[in-house]
Length: 244
Image (cartoon, rainbow, N blue to C red):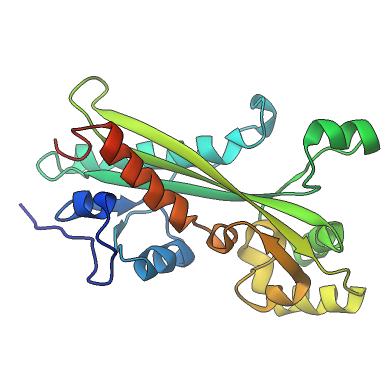
């Protein structure tokens, strides 16, 4: 059986990190940004991207923040089941799923609807330069909410053979009221073409942003602090977490 150790020398020696030593940990995402965040925090999981279509209907969720959490869970479960079927003798000990989305008009939705008649809009990756510009114009001088759903899938002895632990992290991003030529120049640069909301906070997109309220890494794509806190909570609450 192959040996595994995703914990890097720079990792803090926390209860969660201790439990991950010599375990097979999987990140169900091809995002280089999530990989970089985890690596900087001392964890280097195997990368096994999910093939989940990410097409859940937003209208099926009573609370919009449930949407990225559900997508993250579908990703993680799909990868967990696939790896168990491919190699039952070397199953994953932990699969991490994540999904980051951007919602416009970051006020409590009920208050916003009552006062302005405006509903929060989900911003996916732009489909074209025109769509990217439309997104940035909507965000310009306003506030958006970046939400990352994180789902952890790990083995247990009872059916269906795995457990799921979910969380979400929410961060507010405040945009400068930029002139149109700045937005157009950013769109032409192409940096935001493959990012939810059409901007990258860690790159040139920082020129569009006035301040961030919350976890910066969450806006990049993965809430590292909350993830490691969740691991510690699981160690404290579940005696056999990652011990099977």
